[in-house]
Image 1 (cartoon, rainbow, N blue to C red):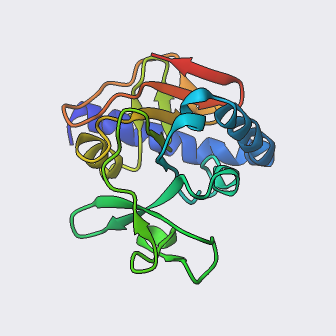
Image 2: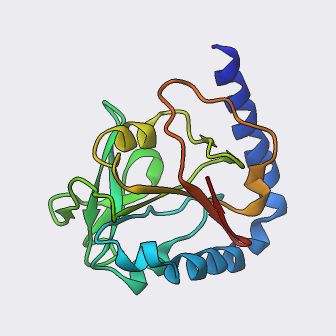
Length: 193
């Protein structure tokens, strides 16, 4: 493991150790983040918005789907090649969603419609464990979002969604495959790069 990979592993572990201290604030912080996004022209104009079903330590964006279900899609990850595709769903129930990789709810792809290639007016909202103030992000370590952003999502706006304790002032070093973000949204507002 190289030094950058070790640094990222430490940042992941740090957030997993710290997030229980903030967990009681996550619902209100998630609501505030969704309010920021819902009022932003980029979200309002987007034909495709990539969101996700949240894990315990991630920003909950489900109210965005409730606000614009015809625009927001969820990822389905292939655990063989760690690539994902996004699908529209008509409900968040078991008729359209089922546990996928890591037990995270994903679309049942035979019931959803694929969003396809994202264009310049579209938006990809990306979770992570750590972010810095210049557009770097530490995710799960599988490179799933980086693969998607390098292909189907390369033209779209790329915003990290995070709670403010996840954003650090020290730079996160990027590896060649890491795709930098265009901005981050926290409960305190937007950070643009």
